[in-house]
Structure formats: structure tokens, C-alpha cells
Length: 69
Image (cartoon, rainbow, N blue to C red; front, side):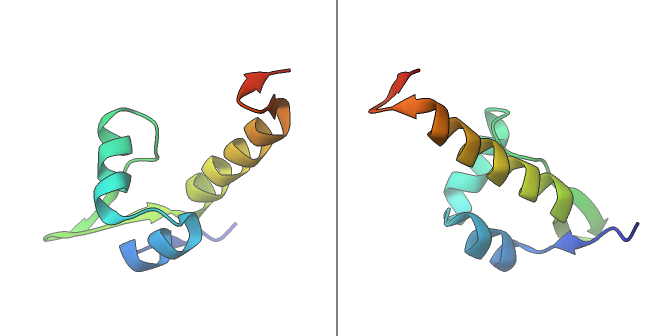
């Protein structure tokens, strides 16, 4: 298995979230955390971002007008 690390511009494009929203959700535990790439560079594991997106898609399917079915 190949591990792919995504940098911020790709994570923003895939999730539709802004930088500040990504870091806010990370601080609340509602978004995958970064891994250090050395120096000041960080990235996210692609598999964790894909899982996060999948969970949100599934949650949308279980909700009808904001009420859990």
C-alpha cells in the first residue's frame, strides 16, 4: 500500500473548507490531524481525508432536514 500525503491546497480543494475552518475543526477533534514533514511543513494522510469525506457523505444520507432518521 502506498501512503499519499496531501498538502493544504489539495485538502482545501477536496473538502471545500478554508484553511481556518480546517484548523478549527482539527482543534475540536472533528478533522484529521497533520503529520510533520520536517521544518514547518505539514500534510494530511490521504486515507484519513477520504475517510472524513466518506463519513460526512454517510451522515448526510442518514439525516432528513437536519433530523436523524
